[in-house]
Image (cartoon, rainbow, N blue to C red; front, side, top):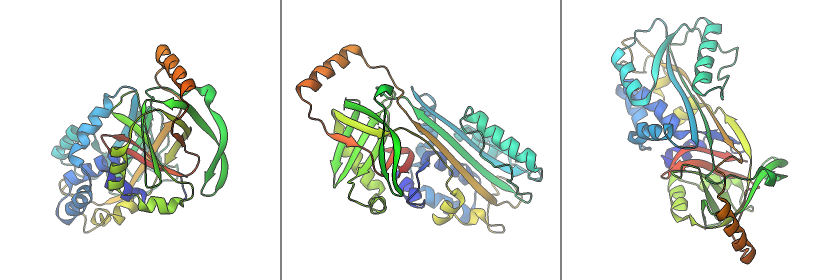
Amino acid sequence: MADFAVELLKLTPVEACMVMSPLSMVAALSVLERGAGGATKSQVSDALKRTSNDDVPELIRQLASADGVLMNVATRFYLADSTTLHEEYNNQISKDFDVTAERLNFRDQSHTVQTINSFVSDATHGMIKKLLSDDFYAADMKAFLVNAVYFKGQWAKKFSEDSTRKDVFHGIKGDREESFMNMNNVKTCRYGQSDGVQVLALEYKDKNYEFVIFLPSQDVPFAQFRESITGEKIRELLGQASSGGVDVTIPKFKLSSSPNLKSMLQSLGITDLFKGGTCDLHGVSPDELYVADAIHQAVIEVDEKGREPDPMAEAAAKRMFTLRNIHPLFRADHPFLYGVFRDHKPIFIGQYC
């Protein structure tokens, strides 16, 4: 899935902070693949071959039961109210992905916007309140895919809010003031360095999940660094990272992004899905359908919250710190790539620049 994630990320503007959920996108695409046929199915399947999409239902189930890791997903396939819907299809996507297809009167603008926004808000427990703007209107639309996801994790060891400081982030568009979280001699992490790239993998409370930052040398242009990154490089960097004390300084942030999912999928070769007359979704409905639009919104929060430290372990760490203050320094004060990973699979991926 890392290859798919990097390919998607490289389709976004290099100068903008961004977050997206490859896992959630793959799940949404798999929902469409279940009902597709002919060239439409082949195009979606070819894109999904870049991922281990068979793992997706299990990854989603694991996330639902993870301790201290919150991921709320809102995915729904909306169809015009005049559409005939195959019940077998709806049952299948409900079983595999906990997703349903629903008919909606797109001609009623206010009702359409309210219905979709209410669904997303409820599914994300109010964390994404407004997916569609009030002026969204597509009366002739036959099918519409919605995918929104919110993530927040608690660290295996929390950052002290008293140690959070304002400092300068050297962004692509110039310097700006940011809040930075700081912790010395962090043991609940993995760290590595290769070819001028530092990698820091911070453990969440559920240690199966890590927040990973890929930080290039400050003298390497971010655009050049991003272009050089591949799924294989990510797997290599994560494989080389090892446990140990690290002095950490990273930005505190909450980021929301709505990349143009339709355009991105078209760039990956999924074109028939969005064309009237060529789209084959007869597994969904006997009617002639095509997907008018696909919307993805992702929100991620990175703050200090996490597990309270063990006092005895803290005291031992402080004694060790006074005896040997020699730790790698990881200071993310310039553009970097990041992600939330489980077993080297990117649940989220993004860039902070």
